[in-house]
Length: 335
Image 1 (tube, rainbow, N blue to C red):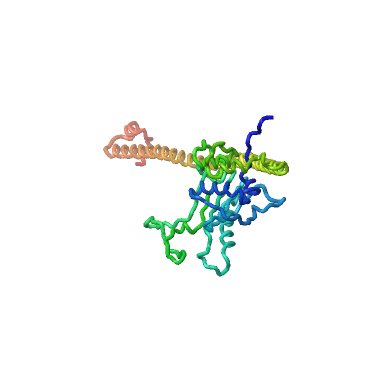
Image 2 (image 1 turned 90 degrees about the vertical axis):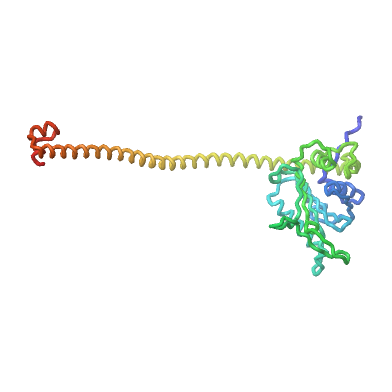
């Protein structure tokens, strides 16, 4: 029997089951080092809602909360399916973490810097990149300079930017990654998307993952639980995709029906409006034409009467005036 091809555990399962073990810190440290572009060392894994092991744990979201050698708190979360208020929940999680790590009455100078890293497997908003980074900057409204403040650190007053104090956010949109991996970050995101690791990789964390996250290194019971986890994710995604498709189909049908009804109503209204406008225009044109015709007729009649009066004053006979103007003898006598 040939050697089985290496297969690697998904990162969300690794977070829940393996990466909390100090012996496996190097995998997570590698991801953070590549993402932050700064050597990161984890000293402790802290408890959080999503990294507690229980039969009722949701497969949709897992997270890990770690403290680095600088005393900063790092939240890493993997989200498999869509959540309506996802960004709001990230904000809540960061705020909760800040308050959990400072005691009532303690100096605000002891507030910990928090990093939030979200690895998402669903379409989160609109954007062309697979990695987004958010941090707080205070920029002058009129001068465009960045505000710098003074803080006390180890009995010294040091300048700092607010972004060095406020939380930072990273969102990795895994499904948007479609490149050939050439950089350490791209190799990491490629692993997150495909589960594949290059055999000769030297990328921090991935070289360790090749040894520590092998599927066939798991005990049979653990492999069974892992396979069930993958099945649950696929079923969940299929259910959501089906619901989305049904919703789109129903929405289109309702939209077409409403569109036709609105179109008919608008058509009738526009038809009436156009009919009124055309009617007014035609009426105005006909009125002008009739007015001109009547005016011309009246003008001619008045002209004939005036001519008849002048001929009568000149002493012409009534018979001659009648022949010249076409008026009756009775009308001429009345002049």
